[in-house]
Image 1: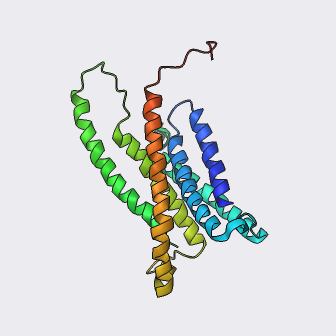
Image 2 (image 1 turned 30 degrees about the vertical axis):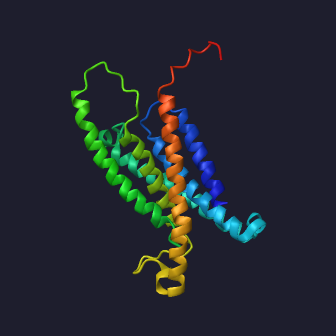
Image 3 (image 1 turned 90 degrees about the vertical axis):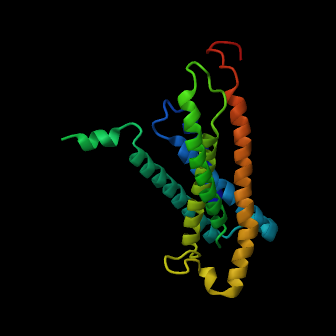
Length: 102
Length: 132
């Protein structure tokens, strides 16, 4: 479930990046962040599948719910990392302008 | 258990290489004659893609390990380190899952670089309304 949610986040971020008007939002970073995590979870899933076999596709409801909660938390953490970097690098100069304002 | 540490270690090395490459690339750019089109994507830019994937993946997986109680905020930070049997399992996981994770990310990055070079050298697409 965590892998699935991360892949969806990566795909949405990539589509948004492809349709960007300019590079001010630095969406590429968000794409790399999610794709990196998705690839790593894919490997984790493959090893788990090799160990559990078909049982891997029949998780308990409680485990699925916990994994979904974790997946959403991971997406939120990725967004926070991206947002903090965006505000620090301030490519559009919005933060600098706001700070200079009287 | 601690598979993300392999990607984090690779990320440290790649970040150092990327910074060195960036410095090296800045020099010829200053003496490059005007009007010379750059068709190749600089290696430092490509390395930046890899560092973002490795750091991003390692950070988000570290969060998952905190979630599952495998990483704690006190020494030795990894719960598996306190038991010899768990420690051996952790090192085994790092050597198998961790290495595969870092390897697959690097492999995907190599594919991305090859594709990016080809796309960058592709002629501009025709204007809207042209033949598809």
